[in-house]
Image: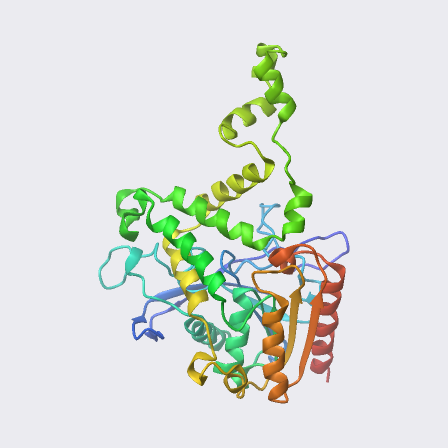
Length: 406
């Protein structure tokens, strides 16, 4: 990695892949072998290998956490504002690892890949995966990298669930857990949103029972609707009203067209008109246009079977399930020190859910810090540049860095 200067916004990231021929047992009772995990690393592992930070990703993210790809200036990692030289998780001090989860569609083995036993694309036959399975796979990758203990595991949303699971599955392999905008399990409402999104995908005629690859089609309609549903839940009502309100799309242009008040030849050359005609047939409000744009973009790069797998993993996660629903008992074996962060307008992973984790940890006399950030951005706030949030993260990782000093 090159030297950091204040003018350098991002560094060059290099994706890597590791192959695992051995069998990985899964929580479902199935297993997977001959799989690949895509990952990226940033910074330098120190001499005693004590400064590694694992970053776990959320639903539609990947191992590309920070930096940009060479020759692709608009390819910033999804948490590039958080991770890098001089940033809250400072790669001049930490060796940061991002791993793409099994079942994803960004490089690790998933439904789009070939089953080693049949030679056919997995499709709907890809095995069910859970948060616990992802953590086990991540632990194997760390073994290959020579990292026996992590300074911290960091994650937001679904990534936060993975960080929490790390504290239970491998308590001796980590010192800190940073859980952002997450929860100990999904509420019934959250599961309901996921199910509606899944139904949109599986009822798309192009889904073909999950084997649409064979037909050379993509269930884009279902993916668009699934993304639109999800995106609504990521934003707060205040942000949606402030950003879009009840504003109509190009009302003046629409009126001009209806009344014939503008020169048709001139309008035909207008990029605004072409874009308007292309996308507004039954779209009147700006919020409709925004959601359709997000849905269209998502359907171009995300895999339908992956969406089903990952939302199911979200639904299944519940460490208290095997302890009679008692989260305090579930977290009794966690020995890490914790930072939890929530956002006041996040109604999908509300502060109440983070406080449940805080209470369970305090009941176990664990070391825990908690920050509840008054931010207007809803669930997406964990990806944004709120100064108070960034300050909390910087301060906490500064304290971890001090532990590394001889």
